[in-house]
Length: 371
Image 1 (cartoon, rainbow, N blue to C red):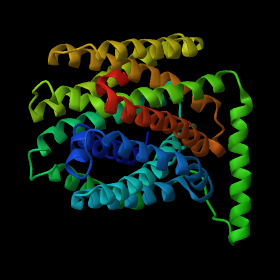
Image 2: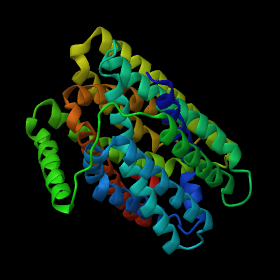
Image 3: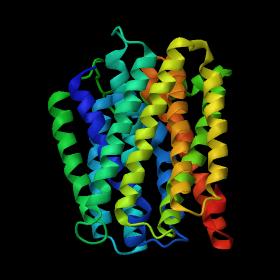
């Protein structure tokens, strides 16, 4: 695996982790309240839903590197706006840019990485596991750092400024050191561009009609979006209500991502030894994740709450490798960015549903009931 793209992949997730440990708390400080915070996260999901698949097609047509560089610029705009925000309107604008950044980065960087590895000797199980590990290591480092950065300045300024600096560095590294395997020549003229987009979109959507395992993968993408959104939106307010110090949030996020690494390695071993059992492993992980979410809503002490939270992330890590391996094995390289973005589109759709449910549930009962 190319060292430069590993570093870029790692740093991207470090930036995500820096804000993940205090995301809900940051939104509450910059224009949201406990009832509307899920709506802002829902707005993020809505923007991603609108642009996820078109951005994947954009990456397939104009280049995965171009798409990722655009996402870095959008993230910088987003975090700069959050930094200055003190109202719901300005926060909403920042969330829109953040959703666009997520849309243009999700399929592009993964497809770019996979494309560079398909001719190597490593198995697809090894590649997807290594990407999951790099993601989790980056998120872990970022989450642990985010807990301490929260003490710098006011309203989580340290976290936001650190993210802006990382994305500036990512632009420099990607532009200077990352090379694409496939040559890209942008269509000339508006009609040629639209025609290319139509063809690419039609071919990518036809992948959904494959049925069988493909249908299972996209159904579970929706379910995972529901689970992740509800978990990530409300674990911080739940733990804060138990009188936990700020540094605890960084440690818990760090531990959660560390558990994901263990789950990823466990899934790699199972898939390498029993490759034909990928679907069964995926089914088991998603079912156990559901059990963990139900158990989480009954926890009233910090230690037991954190323990169940980490257990949920073990099943998330194990299931994501199984899911990614199956999807990348089935997806053709020429349409990989679009197909991965389509999967992320369904994931964000689940997140949007969870956000809307969270708003109504938190308005009429304990917000923990969403689990």
